Length: 409
Image (cartoon, rainbow, N blue to C red):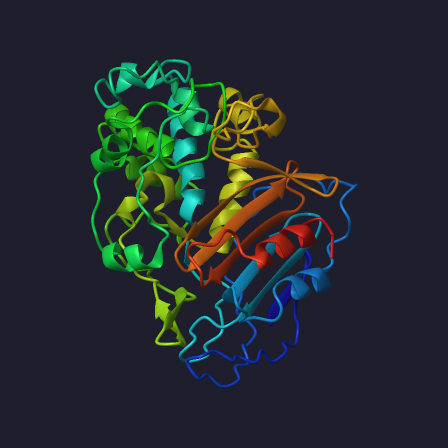
């Protein structure tokens, strides 16, 4: 495992241990080298550490990402920042054929963390007076939703209380994905394909159900209001001002440029486990909900600016920390099964032990990632893991990293 423990005024490189790789493709042992840290951005945060936070324990993070590759993940990277302590490290391999280690500055598909960028772009339009979050989608995008749908307030697109049905395709089934990974999709296909002839799932604003379609409609909204591709709003309003030089909206480009820890799908072929490289794929199916590429330093910088109120005006920043007081939609009418909502506009509230974090997870075939931070930004964590089963939820390593963030071993 590769790790670097950084205090505010010094950087200490730690000796790494050998990671033994035993994969069906016949690799030998691999010994990752110490990752060269990326050039740091100028610090944006000014918050002091929350005195209730436990001291950062590097050993918890080493254990959290140790033992890779395993039966869920081939490689992982973690970056911890903030006034409560700093650490970074990698484990496993970035290429199962060569044994090359995971680059600490690797770029990765951030999946649904794209939703946070898109939601931020919408909040910025609201702060500029160009849209009203209380007005319905139908006022801005007439004819996009079925005529028999009730008014769908813009805010509900961003906090997953819109009730819109999702596109019913098996996009996380390996066979379907491999057959369609290079297909190009249009926003109209994504939204109309999901909603036409399909009833709304619940009255907007009354329940919460996580999904992509609300953020796809939000992408269409941005384009209608600005007259430009939605990606321009993110590039001009977020990426360029924050100097996120490793963050991209690829459109139909299937590649991940620059340093990368490659993603794989483990498949049983003829009684043997074969690791199919799924790094390259056309992300238009995910579009404004899940298409983006970034790296850990950029996501941390974005989190500091976003949660610190530097990208939106106070009224819109408050939306980030407002979780609707509604139940999660579970498809039945038994209130005894109801779980409370956890998503706000663009991000999610997590309780880890006694601590509250705000952030977002994301995944795509071959990749799982997240960023999370305490409200005062004193502890901020970004991770990426190369999971090898696209149909699975976040791998166990994700839970271990999140627990380590709160000092739980």
